[in-house]
Length: 89
Image 1 (cartoon, rainbow, N blue to C red):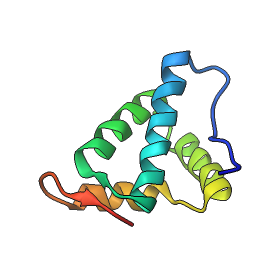
Image 2 (image 1 turned 180 degrees about the horizontal axis):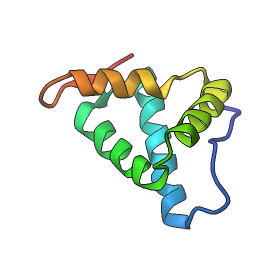
Image 3 (image 1 turned 120 degrees about the vertical axis):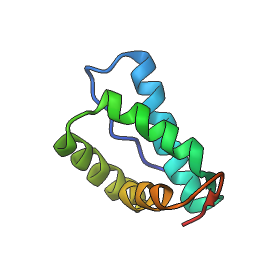
């Protein structure tokens, strides 16, 4: 893993930790799988930090360029599942 997560210099330390947690769960969805509820909770917190849709899209594009993982697909899949399903991309 020779890449870095897209982060904003204006975020607090706690916000950076929460965003890194979100992107880590996106990675896990592609590698080992992650519980639906975990990714949805992390995404909700991510949206509190990044409420702008355009900023979210830019961060996701930057993340995808670095990792080849697509956050949008993970979130869409998580929203369609019911219960405590595990998401594996």
